[in-house]
Length: 84
Image 1 (cartoon, rainbow, N blue to C red):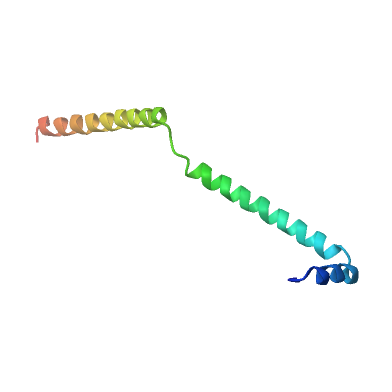
Image 2 (tube, rainbow, N blue to C red):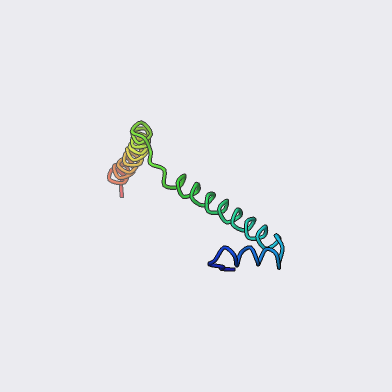
């Protein structure tokens, strides 16, 4: 309901009562709460990690990669030394 003039709003309130305004206010509040929740979820998903967190992550990934490479090299050496 778009009423550009204040006297139109006052007349509408007299004719229709307060319920349409209460409904609109409640709907707007729900919409604001939903948008706030989405914004918080987006912020958490795109949170930048700190230098310490990044260093820990890089160290753990490097250790995992090194272990995988060592296993691969060991498997290749065993395959070379097998008679066959």
